[in-house]
Image (cartoon, rainbow, N blue to C red; front, side, top):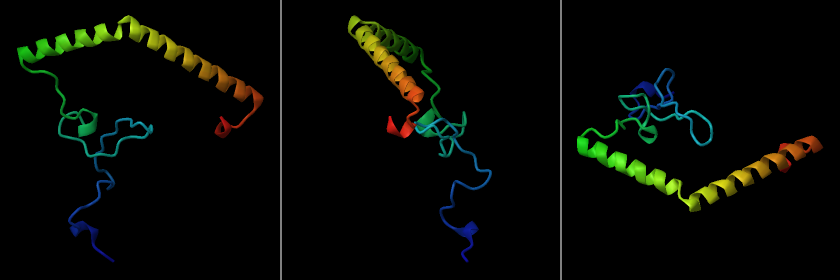
Length: 107
């Protein structure tokens, strides 16, 4: 039997070891090692503190205004309405399948 306490790369999944815990795309908690501040890993914003300098804050505000303007343009509004309609149709179809008694794996 090998003594794991002297192993050069111990597992992070040890009992009591801190984990990030952010919700992943699979819906499970992230198991990565958290960074020092905030308790999140590098993938989930562990060190992000936002802009610090006045120039950086001005640039961030300008970028946010540009992004909002782009999302509120007529072409994006039409896209959002189309996607919302598609989502409603999907929910209605699933409701019909449930009423019919079909198992979910058939959808």
